Each structure stands twice: as structure tokens, then as C-alpha cells.
Image 1 (cartoon, one colour):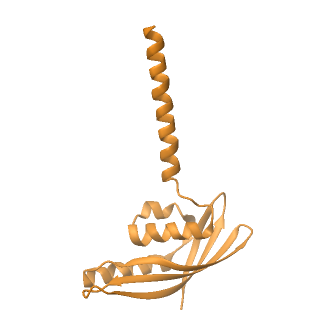
Image 2: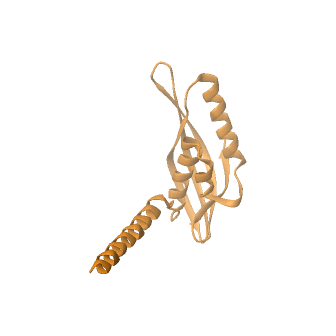
Image 3: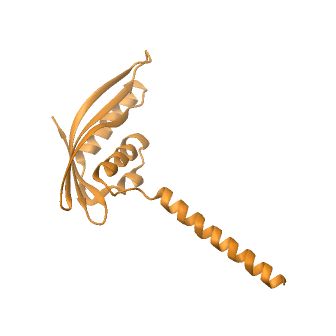
Length: 145
């Protein structure tokens, strides 16, 4: 009888652990099923969370993202100079997909709070190239003048 109770308790614990793992995995795995979803999550991770390891989950292995790195550096310099924080949000996406390649023309809002309580918003146009290899990844980005 005691063996049956211990076995049942062990099975319940094992099943609970397995369910918790699956739920955790689904909650933390990034959604890379669409180019615009990848771009939204990348912008949040790269510019707002400043989480390089999370941002890398959305990048091609040999991505050309020098323009993104320069923009992040400029944002950090602005923050240091004026003791403020810059947030960057997507305003619009124009997505064109051709097989395993996607081009996303994006407008990004750069929002800077001022000492008066108002916020200054500037817009930048960007061109992102993505590739699908099981999931969408960002391979290059350029700022469009």
C-alpha cells in the first residue's frame, strides 16, 4: 500500500514538472514565425531592454547590423549627455516576402522625454532584410535617409 502511494506521488510530481517545463518553454521561446513579429521583438530586446543575448536570438549568424549598433551607441550617448532614457518603438512596417527572403521597410519612433514632462518624438526610416531558415532572422539593417 505504501509503495503504491509513493509511486503515485512520484508520478504526480513527474507530470507536474513536465507540465511546468512545457509551459515555461512556450512562455520564454521567442516567436519567430513572421518577419514583423521578429522585428518587433528584436527592437524591444536591442533598444529598450538592452539585452544583447535576447537580441541575438533574432539575428542571422553573420548579420550586418552595423547601422543598428551605431544607432544604439547614439541613443546611449544621448542618454548619458542629458540624463534621460530613449525608447524606440515601431510605428509601421511594410513587409514583402519572396520565398525565404523578406524585406521590411520600417518606420521607428525615437521617443525622448524632456525635463518639462513632454516627449520629443523623431522618426527614422529603416530597411531590414530577413531570411527564413526554419524561423525568420534579421540578416541586415540600413537606415534610409
